[in-house]
Amino acid sequence: MSAGSRAKALPVVDPNEDVGAVVRGTRANLLVVADGHFGREASELAVDHVLDAIGDDPPPADLTDDELVTVFFDAGVAVQRELGRPGCLHPDSRTTLALALVAGDAIQWAAIGDSCVVLTSTADGARLDVPRNAYLGYRFSIAEVAAALTRGRAAWSSGDCLVLATDGLIDAVAVDGIDVAAVVSRELGSPVDAARAAETLLHLALSEDADDAVTIAVAATPS
Image 1: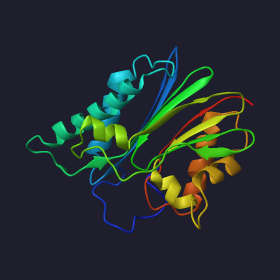
Image 2: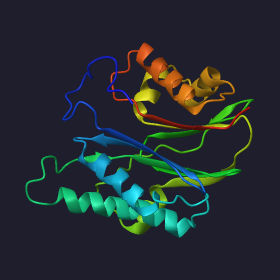
Image 3: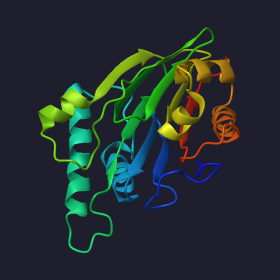
């Protein structure tokens, strides 16, 4: 995580409104990133909810669709409830939320907003999520959350790398029509170490003068 390499052009409420978390479990690992807008409260609340809901013992990439949608809906409700309390410093705070469960041979992912989920292999890479103009903190019905939430499962094998990142990475490296997945795949190749992959992408964003916070969570399999 970094607050970026130069000051953001637009005024910000907090220097860094991103939140990230990684939980190593016996059945699966959990990756989470959130990009807050208009204050860090929403991103902190959303990630806290995910950790409370599924972080103690992450399930092995087998949540039902209803369970997955409920996690995001309830995270949004938690954000709304806390931001509505008297004395809240930034009641207009909103946030993206992306998570992934990484098990032995499969991953399950979901995202709302414009933080990205990218899966690379030894040959190529693909952005799995579809960015949408929907952010937790607004009042949504559970049906509206289901419609806005992109999610899925994918096979997980040797040489694969899963990257969750806030749009600080996307805005810094995905320019001139270049897709973020192409950049991630080119830079990482076939990583053998998740920490090294995260550092590589973070340094790349900073070298491109990222003017937004950058948060990256990575899971990788040995090639």
